[in-house]
Image 1: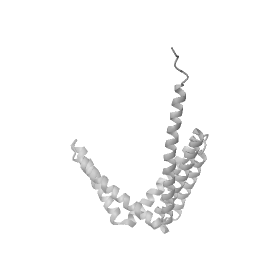
Image 2: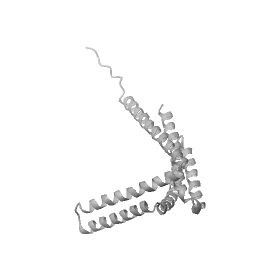
Image 3: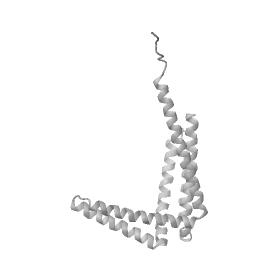
Length: 194
């Protein structure tokens, strides 16, 4: 009777499956990074159009959220919850309608919100680069944080003269550098598991 080969190591099998999963995930991450870079370049090229597009998208998202909150309000529940959902629906609907009917005001408000977002993103990128500093590619997070902070400071310093094009430019630059950062991190991950 022949003895079966027991040299198959389950740890080796698990490691090769994990490596394949990481390579697959990093491939998707690279594809999405390239798409982010492309969208960022397009937004930088036509910042007024990109800003207007973001404003319209946010307005419609607010209106859709209003409809969903209204539907949720009538799905049952306690009277306080129904009233709360209706009030939230009215608020979202009003703001969404206002943003769509007054795009310049909506654009200015979104630019202010993006500025706050950029300050917070910069802080988080600095923190993340510090936490991941021993890993390859962590310096790109620090670079992303520096660029994002510089953008936020730029917005504050040019506020009154740049509202019409600034949102599109900010979104474009942020997407471009986030795409480059994610691309570099994904490439570093691929090199580690290769």
